[in-house]
Image 1 (cartoon, helix red, strand yellow):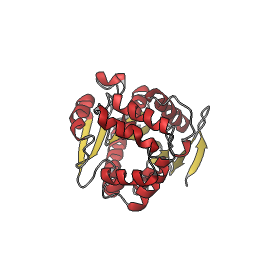
Image 2 (cartoon, rainbow, N blue to C red):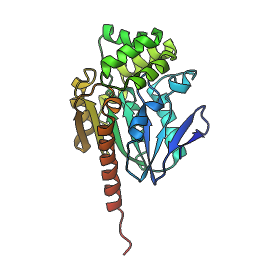
Image 3 (cartoon, helix red, strand yellow):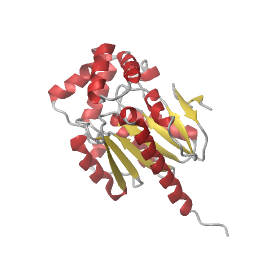
Image 4 (tube, rainbow, N blue to C red):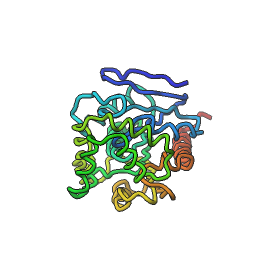
Length: 271
């Protein structure tokens, strides 16, 4: 049964559901909220994991959150969540949150079991040209109808009701927060200039029709090395968890099951 808990020494809450010895923590991307993951969570079948969701500062129910809006701030919030949960975990990050989950996994090597990166922005940033990134910066001034149209461009087969809901959520974000977050994922983190400090297994999922990250995938794979599994998802743009939720849930189930099997096989038997 789902419950909501306060993060110790923080000004926000997180949602946890199911039960298990491990946790899978979902971190949404630019302009989204924690509920964007529910089509996936509802379809997961793996039994060893509880699920955890929360709103990133500045978005969802945290539109009033104070800055700074930096990777370090987002990572500190996520670290506080996984520490409150207090068990080994797998982190799932979409788009802008891919660097965030990587930073936290690298900082908790004793409990970080794996990473799932969905349509990830590279740690070193998207590095879009000025004209292109200015469109993203300006989204804080858009109304719901404009956001709805833009989301359908990036995820043309996403359910209409969910796109409409997200458009209303996005329209409530403060313009200065949207601008800061856009610059953040476009400029990247200094850690992007060196190999990842996380050495565990990585599942990278991306839409075949996603023009934003399509040319960045090979660099991300090189960053993580041989432990990376890549799946390209047909008939999907930047939000495969909305457009192909059943397929994405199956891939996540498979990855989580493999991690549990590997972990349990490494534990010495007590015969």
